[in-house]
Length: 415
Image (cartoon, rainbow, N blue to C red; front, top):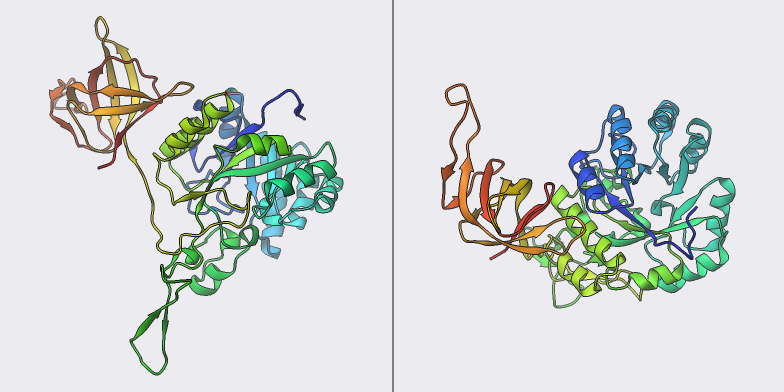
C-alpha cells in the first residue's frame, strides 16, 4: 500500500504486446496492464500467450514496474470452467494483480490465484463508496472508478471508502458511449461481442435512415444540423488536470490503449511522466497532440462528456519517422544515429527526438545513408548515400549534433 501523503500516484500504461511493454517501462510507467489471448476486452491487440506471461512479468519487474493482467471479459459457463487452470498459471507467473469484473471470476481468482492482488475493472461500474466497500470486503485491493464519475464523485468515494482500498482512474484514451463499457451494439449489429473483447465500434459509424416506402433513399440521422455521428465520444485527456485527480485521492492514473502501437504508448507515457515529475502541463498537452487521436475532452470529470457528432476521424500533428537503434560519437560535436525507418524522411529534415526522461529535442538529418542488409553475395555491404529514407523497416544512419538514446523514437511534423 502506497503512502498517499508522501508519494506520487502510480502511472499505469497499456501494453498490447512485447514492444509496447518495453516502450512503457522505458519511458517511465510505474505499472503496466495487458491481457493474454483469452478473457481480455481487447482481442484485436497482439496480447500475450499464456506461456509468455512469466517473461513479460520479469521484463516489468526488472524495470521496477508492476504487471497487471486483465481478466475482465464477460464470463459464461464455459469461460468459468476454463478459468481455474488459467488463473493458476497467472499466479505462478508472478503477476502483481488481476483486473476482474465478473463476480464468479473474482471468486475463482481468490481460490486459484491466492498470491495475486485483485483489482475491480471499470466494467463493474463502481461509482459509490458502498459498492467499493463491498468489493473490499470480498478481497479487492483496488477498484477502477467508473468512467461516468466526476472529480467530485471520486473525492466523495475516496472519503467514504475503506482507507486500505486503492482507487484507479482513467486519465487518457478512447471513451465508450455505453455505461462503463457495457454495450450490446456490437453483438447485435456485427455479431461481435464487445463484452467478450471483440467490439466492432458501431458507435463510431455514420448512420442514416431508409424510408420503407422509398427504397434506396437514405436520410441522415442528425443530432443537430452538424451531422450524423450521434454516439461518437471524444477521447479523454486529463494531462492538464492531474492535480485535481491527485487531490481527489486517486492512487493510480490509467492510460487506455491496448490496441495502440509502441510509438503511441511511449509518447503518452512520456507526456504524463514528465508532468507528474514537474514539467509544465502545457508541455504534456503539446506532446499528446502529436499522436493520432480524436478531439480531446475531459470526459465526465467536469460535467457531461462531449461527442464529435459531425465526424469520426483522427487528428495527428506528427508521423512516426523512425526508431532509434544506436547512437555513437562521430567526431567533435557530432553523433552518428542508426535508426529503423517507419515513415519517409529526407536529408536536411528537422526531426523531433522522443527520448526517456528528457524534453523532446530537434534533430537535423545530415549525411543520410541507407544500410543494406548483408546476404551471401555481399556479407559486408557498404552504406549507400541517399537523399531520402523511404524503405520502411530498413536501417538508415545519419549524423546530428544531439546524442540520442537507443530505444527512443523520431517523429516528423505532418504536412
